[in-house]
Image 1 (cartoon, rainbow, N blue to C red):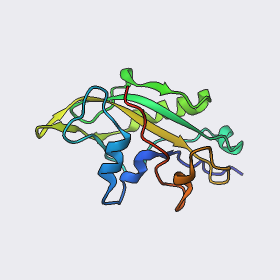
Image 2 (image 1 turned 90 degrees about the vertical axis):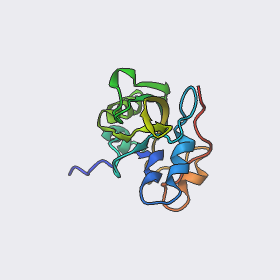
Image 3 (image 1 turned 135 degrees about the vertical axis):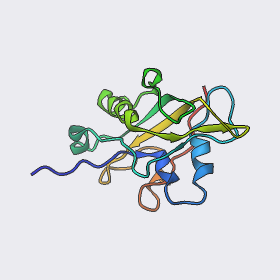
Length: 155
């Protein structure tokens, strides 16, 4: 029997339904080369990252940091997407990159006008039955959807 494969946790899932989400996403998605007045924010409440089924069954976990370019319309430019920090598992890295094809953002703003920005976007693949990875204590508190450790490094 096939079981549905859950979505990977992404740090931006915190943007859904919480008043302090903008600050959390702002801390996680730092622009490379300055900050706009308002960072881009994901539009969808359910993010498009899919756990590779074989790795899910094996309870493999990992973090992928992606470099994305979000244009003035909130679209991710696929040709600019790359893995900034690998999870160490090519299938997880590929799943993270593949998920960006469906991402849409409220564009970043500077002086009230939409602006294009490069960002670092973390995707955390976590299995609900696997042991916490080092540094995941915050992520595991309260049901496994909290931000882990510090924000990604700005390039």
